[in-house]
Structures are given as structure tokens and as C-alpha cells.
Image 1: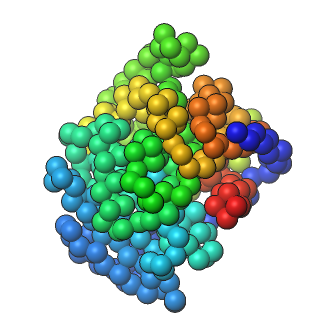
Image 2: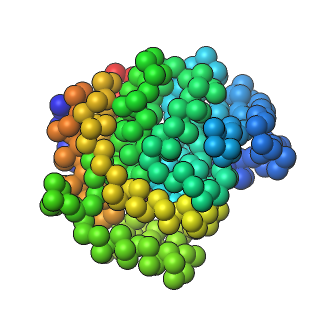
Length: 326
């Protein structure tokens, strides 16, 4: 394994976010573009941009975006809880400009996918990704996951068909396991996750303001430059999803053990983590995950938060690009 420490300045740079909805409007797609089982394409300059849904074996419709040349190497982005594919808009546009095919989906129960009351578990999440990869015939793909999405990447990549995956990246990711157990005494106690459940039940809309306003982006730290746009965009994505699926997913991201998945992954994996991550503490996640990976590289960022790829895309994006091109 390779260990790298990134000593970067704490200056916050302005991030321009283009939401999925505004992008759809900009390229002239109608709401009918989201009809079941349909795929719709448009041209933005010389770039092919499409979106659509797949229907999984249990009848759940999964929304996805698919931008760029279909012959280019694909990069698949996996979002965190309780967000959507839109959380990756900055990275989608960045890697699209570098010539890649970029894909992101809304996990079942999240965003524009069906608001499921069943199948809200990591095995099903990974199965949905496998169905999407098969539908789009993705080969030699790079899978990048944040937080819960990092767990989804680990579970999918460990089981993926040969030739589907070239590399993977885990950003602020939950593996190996967040919960404190006999085997993981350094984990977070169940009371932390019970508190998240209680806040969601009491007032989901308010909780989805409080979390991004505070620890998620590190906006609760002294001297932090708060972005109201990031907070509002987080709330918008969260409230688009289903309350039941979001509630179920709390157990998924906290209690799922990815130890064997990490051990089974055969492709190179880049692990990126903010050293001031208040949501997924680095000591019980990245520092342990890197020891389980056969071909892992760890890079950490002093002072950066759980949502570092949104607050500092100018730092994170080039590091991802260098890994993909290496």
C-alpha cells in the first residue's frame, strides 16, 4: 500500500455547482425524459448527454445520467446518504471536459429513483449498480464513491464481473465498518446512529438543514467560510428522496461490514479522506481500510471535511485524475 499526506492550505475557493435540474433545462429536455425504461439524449456542443432509467429485477426504477463519448473510458460516481447523482455535478463536468464518459445514478429511494420501502440494503444497492453496468455495457470503468457510496463501490467492485472495473476510489467512505462492535471497539456507538434516526423522524426537513450547515462541510469550525449554496443544494437533494429509504439506509451505512469486500478487491483503489471528517472519522475508516486493500493508496487532507470534494474540487479533482491516468 502507499501512504500520502497532502499538506494543502485551508483557503476556501469558490465552487460553481450546476444542478441536474438546471442542466436538463439548459439542454432542452422535458420532464417526460424520465419516463420508465426510456433513455433520452441531447447534444451540447460536441458532447453527447443522456439520462434515463433502468428497471431492476424487483421492479424498481433507477435514474441515471450518462454524459460523454460512449467509446471513452467510463467513470461511475456513487453518491452519499441521503443525496443523489447531482452531488457529483462538479466532478461530472470536470471529467467530461477531460474526455471521459461520466455516469452517475440515484440510489434506490434517493433522488429521482423510486422511493422504495424494500431492498434498502447494501447487497441490493450493489446489485442495482451491476444491473446499470450491464445495461450500459460498462467495461474498464473507474468507480468513485463518497461516504455510503464508497461502501457501495467496495461491495460492487469486490463482486463485479471480470473486465467491468479498472480502478476504484473511496472518498470519505464508510468502510470497513462505522459501528462500534466487539470486533471494532474504536467505532461509533449505536447512540450516534439512533440520534440520526431520531432527528430524521422528528423533523427531516430541519435535520437536512442542520447537517450540511454544521459538521458535513465543516461549516461549524471557527473561521469556516460558509457556502449557503452548498447547504441549499444538500437540502434539495435530500428532500427529493424517500423518508423510509433514508431511514433504512442509516443502518446500512453504519452497520454493514465491508472487511471481506476490501480484502477481495483486486484492482487499484485510491482512498481519499479529510483529516477533519466529523461524519466518518478517519481513524476508524480510511486508516483501517488501507490495511485491508491489496492495491491501495491512501491520501489524507489536513483540515478538510467529510464533503471535501464539494468544498475543494480544485484539490480533489486533479488527484482523482492523476490516479485514473496512472
